[in-house]
Image (cartoon, rainbow, N blue to C red):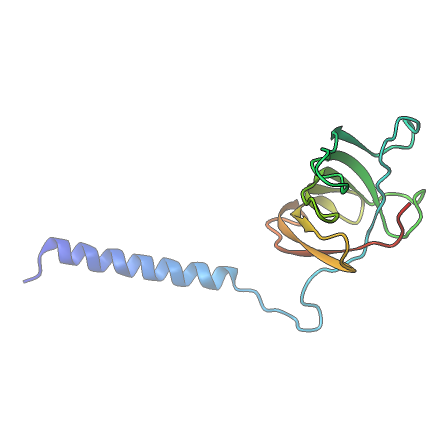
Length: 167
């Protein structure tokens, strides 16, 4: 005769097994290889405040660069930048990029970003949270999408930066 502990362990194991089986089948998604994920291209417009363009500035340095090298090492910039579907600054923004970046390398330009894309349009509602290193000298740089809300609930993936123009 089996002890009550063995019976309760077997029952507990069976319940855990069935709940795991049920939860896996409830969340299983069938991926369409022709449309594996949502992709879109947005243009980020960052206009750093330099003391003269209060009306047009979308970002400002909150901590000045140190004297360690000539790569703005230590400079911290907070931004609220428009994101558009085309390259024109005056186009209607489809999202706002809100967050900060700081220059974190003494020998070359390199920044670390942490920001949220805030969507509030008829196409999308919600946020994407993005963070990672921006190796500015590279042609294309990938940052991590670490989460989201609304239409982007629990999103994971990458965002690729490519510099179009810089003044």
